[in-house]
Amino acid sequence: MALTKSGVATPEKESTLRSKVIIFAACFWVLLVSLSFSATSLTRVVVGYAAINGRIAPLWIAEEQGFNAKYGLQAQGVYVRGAPLLVGGLASGDIQFGRSGGSATLVAVGAGYDFKIVATFSSRNSYDLIARPNIKRPEDLRGKKIALVSIGGTGWMGVLFWLEQLGLDQQRDQIHMQVLGNQAVQMQSVESGIADAAALDGVYSKNLRQKGFTVLGEAGDLRQPIIGQAMVVPQSFLRQRPDVVENYLKAEIESLAFAVAPRNKPVVIQTIMKHLKVSVNDAEEGYQDLIRGVDRKPYPSLEGLRNVQRMLKPRNPKIGEVKTEDVIDARIMRKLDESGFIDRAYVAQGVSLK
Image (cartoon, rainbow, N blue to C red; front, side):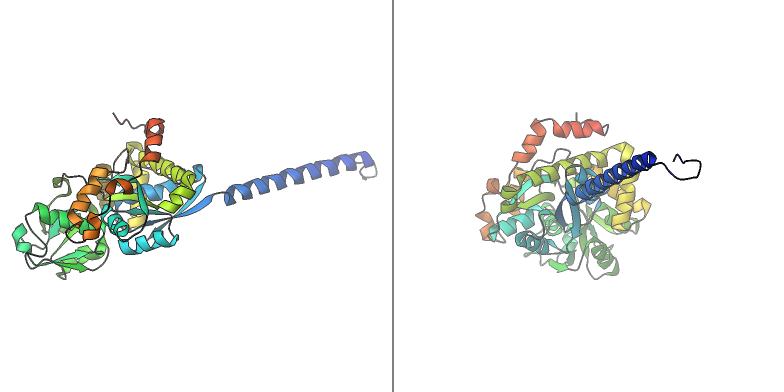
């Protein structure tokens, strides 16, 4: 600041300084307001999921890598213990998006809930059927106990499909379903003898396979399409906020493209380790589950839903009355695909879908 010989600022310099201070303060205030608005303008949504495995990784990646924020969303992922609790959260409005299997969705719709499947991230079986070492053949499961996280969930459905393929029937062969807990708990229950078998994701089945437990069936052996992981939303939310649903699907698709790109493998491995609380070797197994098990273009699978309905109908006649085509809503996914959005998301990550 220019001073007079006596060390006092001239009036002209003081006026210039005050102007600069005012301008700086105004700019700083605008910046603060802008940052505050940016932070508070994100639409907050809750995404519930009832299974923890490597194929869930894109859900976490979407938030942690900024794909949700890119589309104006702040998505809080919430683990709920079992499909019935997830259905309750969707019905109450506490959860806006549910990562759920086709069985839980059909049971809910059969009970009167108006839910829509807007995407299917996994339309194939992802479970190995693992049994204790004394069980050598499928028929050895007669009269035995199979561990589950819940009745009506995706794991339960996986068990039913396995029993059908192996020529077994739960009621006829007196196979008992035990609700014990998540995949980690099921693995421990089989190892300790509390249960005789479980349908386990690769991360958990690997541990038992390495200890000599019997593999009655590997995930890839079940070829018929099912709905293993779908994105389910209440019809009321889809009708009121189609923009939010579309933006969330955009974020998930970009996250999925990120997750399957080889160059991002280290980030994905770290994400799986963090959320599954497993070693790097087990995270590698979860990563391979992800690569093998997810649909690159996650259209909701009508054929998969019909297969689930076929399996559930004898156990719940109301499910047989559900029009499966009314549960599927592929409009947003079709829009994103036909616009080239999905292809561009993969190209941006160096992945070709051809």
